[in-house]
Every structure is written in structure tokens, then in C-alpha cells.
Image 1 (cartoon, rainbow, N blue to C red):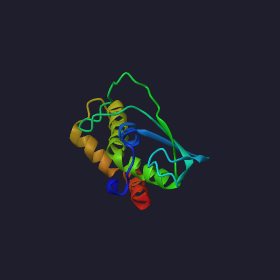
Image 2 (cartoon, one colour):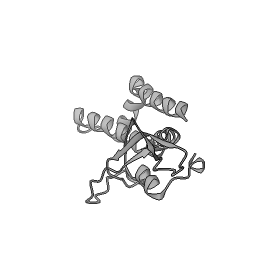
Image 3 (cartoon, rainbow, N blue to C red):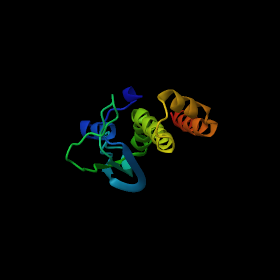
Image 4 (cartoon, rainbow, N blue to C red):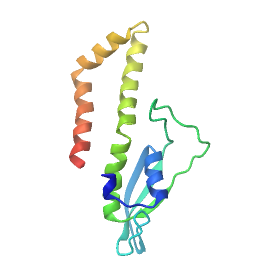
Length: 143
């Protein structure tokens, strides 16, 4: 999907390095899209990125010292692609966070629980597993 887009570096970097995306309607018909810079595509949406970056190997938050929330006025096409690419880019981190919350809850309820028991408990929890799978299905359907 990345091959389908040609965005300025600042926009692509913001999408990849921020875990949260807020997309709202808000036209700026006199302003071209700030992501693709195509003059014939008026900005119809407002995108704000927030959240800190993370190490893709450990999902530990990176402490950059910056708390910037880059924002852009983008066209409809870039808005739709941004939403999809952002979700795909950060799906591993989101899944990790869901699992981390579940594991922490299990460890809180049973402090001496072994890793094998945690895994078995998670895999046997059909409601939780179906929630995770449904989120993935929704994401795949969008793409």
C-alpha cells in the first residue's frame, strides 16, 4: 500500500512515528493537500497525530522529550489512505498493548501464575480472542 502514495517526508514521518491519529472533516478549499501537495486536490480533512513513538522490537515507548502533535490539512484520498496505513503500520503495537493488558490482569489476579497458564487462559477465552480477531477483520476489510 505504501507504493500507492507519494507524500512529503514530514507527513509520512508523522504517520509512522505517532501511535494516534485523529481525522476530522474540515475543508480548506483554497489550500491544496499538505500530504500529497497536488494542487488540484483541495484539503477536505484535518489530521492530527499524537502519541509517542516506540521501539518496533520491544514496543517500549521512546522518550524523545518532544510532545509534538503534528497536524495537516489533507485531501479526501490522502485522508482515507492515512487512516488505513496508520492502522496497518501500528497494528502490531496495538495488538501488543491488548495482550499486555490481559497478561497484567491475569498476573494481578494470580501473582504466581506461570507463562504457560497465562497463554492457555488467553487462548481459552473465546470472548477476548474473538474481540481481537474482529478488530483485525475490520482493519483488513478497510484495506
